Length: 102
Image (cartoon, rainbow, N blue to C red; front, side):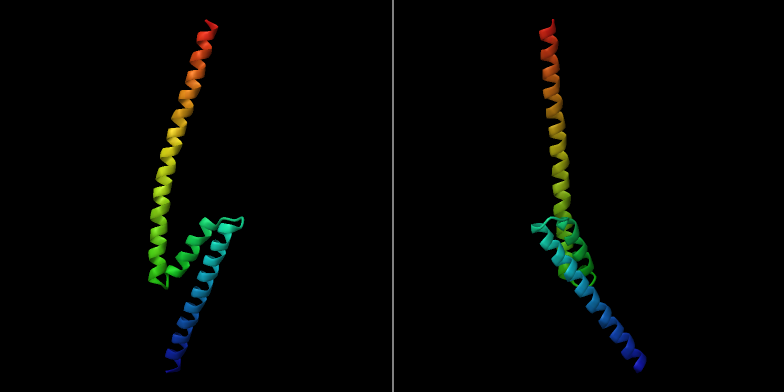
C-alpha cells in the first residue's frame, strides 16, 4: 500500500514539474516575441514539453510545425526567385557593358 502511494506521488510530482517547466518555457518564448530573443525557437520547445501531458499542446505543436513548413517552402521559392532575378540583372549589365565597349 505504501509502495503504491509513493509511486502515485512520484508520478503526480513529475507531472507538476513538467507542467510548470513547460508553461515557464512557453511564457518566456511569448515574451521573447516582443523583446529581443529567439521566441520563435523557444515557443515550440515549451509546447513540446507540454505535449507530453496535454493533447491541446500536441495539436498546437503539430500546427506550428505545419505552418513553419509552409513558410520554409515559400521562403525557398522566394530565395530562388530573387537569385534568378539577380542573375538577370547582372546579365543585363554585363551585356550592356560589352555593347558599350564594342
